[in-house]
Image (cartoon, rainbow, N blue to C red; front, side, top):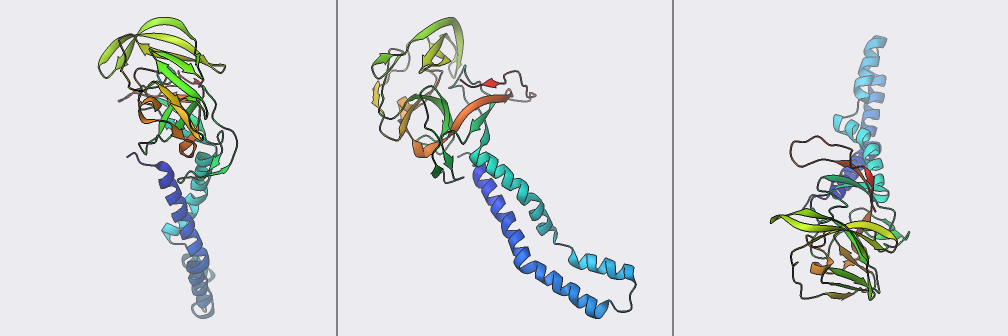
Length: 279
């Protein structure tokens, strides 16, 4: 399982805050008492410089407390930003090609679909619900790992995907041919077709491999309340709701809004040539 940075960040904030509180309530009193005792007993007959140096040494905080107080406000601000506003992610697979390429760094709006507590994900304030055509980050029902796909079906919808055609509530989703391309897959480069598809006014590119796609035993889904049907834009190269089912609203992370950086795998420098909004 991937390391959950939210858990690490919450733990660090709690640790630094606890040390700060411990120092304020207990440890600092010991330093203050030592200073008062020095002034009453040991300061007599010593020069002003000696007294000043001694008092400064007695008042000095332990190094771990000093670091905790320095890091706590910074970590807290980062935690608030990542938990409630914007969180960065990196695209690890090609299931959303051509919208998102492997190596894209994206920004995810954590506020768009409601305010949720970090780590446990409990929603504490409603804002809006996911809409068809939007790109969403979530936890799938079968794995504790971040996924990113496009929202195809919302609660109450009937979704059908058959013979490379997508139907929502019985209506065919129109797609416009763009060009013939080669599609990178685990089996190598295969001939495919690039289309532009429009779902509820959201126009986005999709790719289909020209060869006969994977035969699926199920082609029709009715989306239950509180769940969403997700698909990758690389339709024949995506493990999505067609395989592992719908996504519960409890597992929503946020709305993908922009690509802010791209880095090719390996020893390559990052670039900003792909910076764009995500449609």
